[in-house]
Image (cartoon, rainbow, N blue to C red; front, side, top):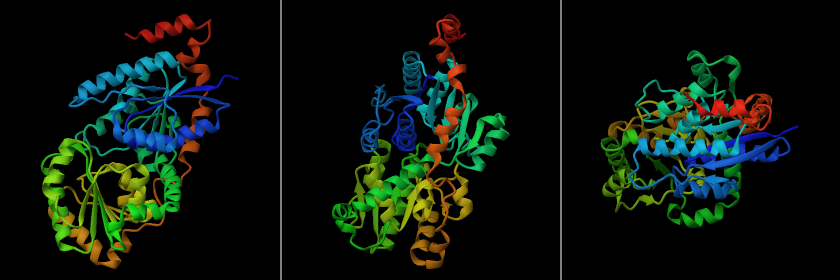
Length: 399
């Protein structure tokens, strides 16, 4: 029996983290799956370390990131690069994750070639196409073309069904970020002594971990966040604030301008994934505008204040582990101060079960892929059959 030919693509660090468990599951089933990995390079420096950490094979690297590239330019290059990969590898299905430009381009490239798309982390919605921007539109495009929707939660699955997705294509799988986190935190706890030496300035003091990089917070929003951190550092001199600063100049400039020189605010280079997991595990609470952190922190029982007005991940908010505070100085300072001074309020933000999964999502996703029978149905599979090659070439030309 022919193996299922899978083209798996990602371009950013969060995508690589969430795709790593799927890559590993495909490798475990090499007798049934032939895997090809195409990296777009949407995040260059931050992506490479994750690829190395998880030992991910890379068959093709599109190396698309260049300075000052517009979203339109990135999208166009990503689409043509992924289309070429589909032509060359002739996959039975394409697998993409999340809400990035890479997943949007992968969904269109697969659609144009009539190759089934597996959308991992499908169905997340805020209802506002500009928040997060452009991610909300990216994930909607992927949902319109996907043949298999791997929804992390029942809420995400309901979104897809409400939008008209066929019920037989929608499955609640959990989120692979939990798979990656549980594997990594166990490994990094064993290396705890080396991390404690590296972050020796923390001692035994409480630590607040801060991250902010969302486009919708560029400008005034990020300045508000930095002013809130500055005020908190002054109010709580016995607490250490660790802020791994994104490489984007729209982030670096205001962060360093407003927070440099404060003895208990530590502006670090972007943290590697294992380093960031250790910092989350070490932290008292987390201030973030990241989507992935909202999914990861509940497994570590760490309260999260999300510095956004909306979230496409409401499950942890409803469970009490995550709270929306916006990019607002007053709210950030007020709620952080409460969690640092009120033990009951802090305990109320620790939840015992992560709504995003138990660490078995990748296993379930790969099993679903194998059940689809795409080896017999996709044009890519037909192209490998001499009797169907001419029809397949015609189907690839498009309109």
